[in-house]
Image 1 (tube, rainbow, N blue to C red):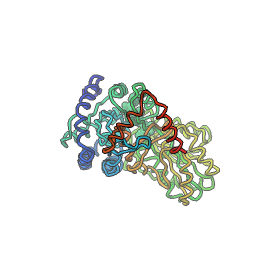
Image 2 (cartoon, rainbow, N blue to C red; image 1 turned 180 degrees about the vertical axis):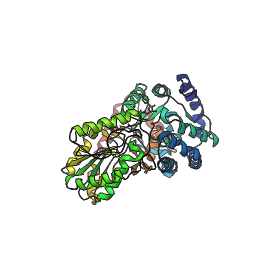
Image 3 (tube, rainbow, N blue to C red; image 1 turned 90 degrees about the vertical axis):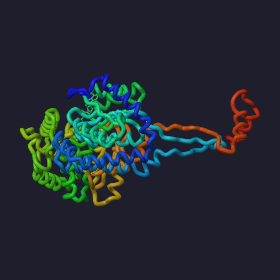
Image 4 (cartoon, rainbow, N blue to C red; image 1 turned 90 degrees about the horizontal axis):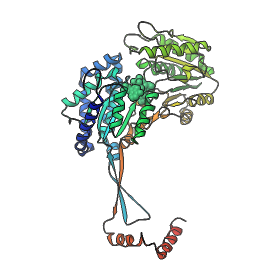
Length: 474
Ligand code: NAD
């Protein structure tokens, strides 16, 4: 790294070259040994007081979130992804063909090479080094570019990597702004981007120009659907936690509540009471907001109020201390706060006539990241969940889907491309290589078949082929 301004384009290219040189040996280590190394690194990170301190310092998050969300996630992600299902997902397997029974194909999952991980500001560990875990386990080298707003956490992970004696060049951090992201996309073999929709579009287009794969994990407008038979106190508690954890800067946060009219008043009363009980600027809601984020929150609240919404908790106005968690009731479905990502501490509540209307509104969004359905009837909730067009849905819970590292998690529509987590994600950071060969002991048949196929085409062979097509595919 050069200085606080960040890396230069040449510096990025040099980092990618170092990564390329180191990657082959890393890939040769094998999945099990790579997994052990990353699990040992996660244990080192867990014991490192400096890391938790940095996460809190850079983001303003309370220690509960720095440790409970970010460090806990790293431990769980390395444990799950390095486990047996990951090893099996990347193991070579064999496939056969009815047309060429004397042959077989060996399919192996080869790392793509150097993966660029470009991370957001809101989760400096979980969405930065945390997102390097799967590509590294799959045998790639990673060059990570964190957000300039919270880059020191990634720098600390690079130090811990070195102190753990892990190979030079396999994991590197480059610092900088959008231009450095672009230089990285231009030099790497694959991109794993997490951030906002507009930067995601640019990154994916740039990767597309080079025909390099790009995973993009972008923004959300996740709906929490509360049916009339829900456990309302539990739903209210979850709405407040889901909306205001990380001061609302969580991609899968509760961005809007869609509640059935008969229970709406009671739910709003409970949500407002829970919100008023939050400890601001202390243990619960302390994360920092950028001025632009505060302005977005203010403008969205003002727009909703102008269209008839009522403020039930908070003021919807920024103060010296930040932006107070604000609850809005009677929000019209077309208000900006009900449609566009807020990514800040504002919770709009939209009253709906029926579950059908809730599903329709949930799906009317251009985003499709996450969501939840609340009902005492789990089968009915599951039926509704299946109709929601998002990458994941919780029933009677919020946010916890992120910690199911064994299951894929991603977005649809403008929320992104690809996904993280699960053995499926490990394969995503590889390309399949198929090697077709003769089966042992089938050599003479293979030689005879090779003579029958190809030029010159013979009528007799075509007649046999026709006969076989008729018999086999009837
Ligand atoms: P951001 O898009 O501003 O920045 C993300 C990263 O991209 C940073 O490293 C930044 O330096 C870089 N960047 C910014 N503009 C760029 C450009 N034009 N070209 C190339 N690189 C660029 O996002 P942020 O403010 O750090 O994070 C907030 C957004 O991220 C929210 O929309 C949130 O929903 C989303 N997010 C999504 C997930 C997910 O898993 N889906 C997780 C966390 C955050």
